[in-house]
Length: 482
Image (cartoon, rainbow, N blue to C red; front, top):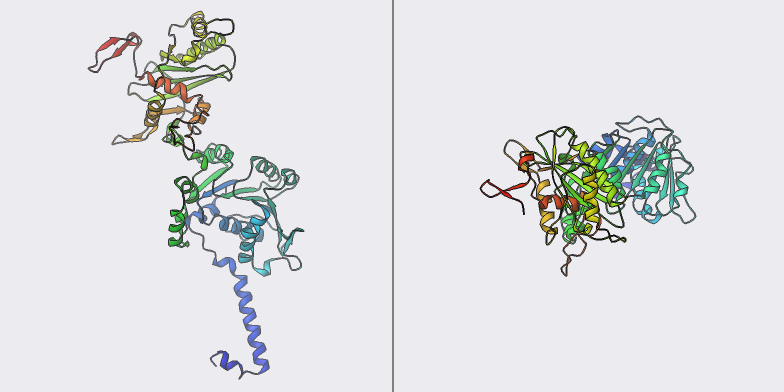
């Protein structure tokens, strides 16, 4: 008999009961196989397959990152993870920005994906006095506890977890508190977020993870378009309403702190190299940026015969100018130990002033170098109208060019030898508002950018000791320096 509303009246009471029972079983069977219907797209699948202890899924909006995070936790809780074998019962902690947000993001996904038969019979979910979700309890004894970023960090201390998940960027304090809780079980931690805030994640997790400096971290990025299930017309409308800056983070999934970088061509993956000995085939240039209220900064670049630069050493020094000169001389001896030569030095003009005892600091620096047996004296930098041209020069040096048989930038950094220069390259930014003639970068994270610019003002090239006092003219001849 074909079933339709008109046929129901022809069924006996017993037949109706059997039909209802059958329908209930079909609903239960459908509910029991919820997880079988999860079809992760390529970006989500890569995240699930990774066995790294810390994973970062940093993407644009609507990528499906929260979806992947919730399914990861459910799989682990039920002992059904296709790539990870974690015994059940187990305990996990998941965080959201606030409890109201959790009720709109995590809670509906738990309801959508956890089979009812897999939840604890008496108390499947726990809620606080305000009615907000605080936990998920499974029939096998596994638990997921829910936390909010607006709680005190101290509440995260003292508990042990098999995994911890953050939906959107947490504070560093919360991260550290929960890392401690993973120690006993050797647990996992993951982040699913659009990188709009908490810049520490970029410095301490994302960048080291990408570069392989922290082998226990794996990073996954993606834009909204990577989700094949999203409505493309709705996404197109969403993107059209974003500003350029918002589009970088909310669509492309880039870290907010990367937006507006001044030296935006610097890529650590191609410019950071292992250090090597500097022999007679290298000429070394020195840039000095003295300060009165913070440490002095000195940068050294070696230049080879092909014009490639190698930022090979740096010095951050918080004592007086005479002691700075002694320290510079000592570093010079280290850099020239294998045959390289110091050919030119340049310093910020701010040093050409008298101290409180009316002693000229520029003169003091040179006296220290002479007392140390040095011959190359620093010249005063010609800085007028050189900030923006200097920036463009650095951008060109780090830009990867195609030379036919290979691709390469023109400036490299010795790994672990110039950490402050590297940090400044990754943090030196344009102001948020460049209207009204405010076109210069922010006065922050420029301590080692400045001496790099001073060096480039010299138009450094490889020179032999005999020719170091001359300049090469346009036709290749030498002329005396001014």
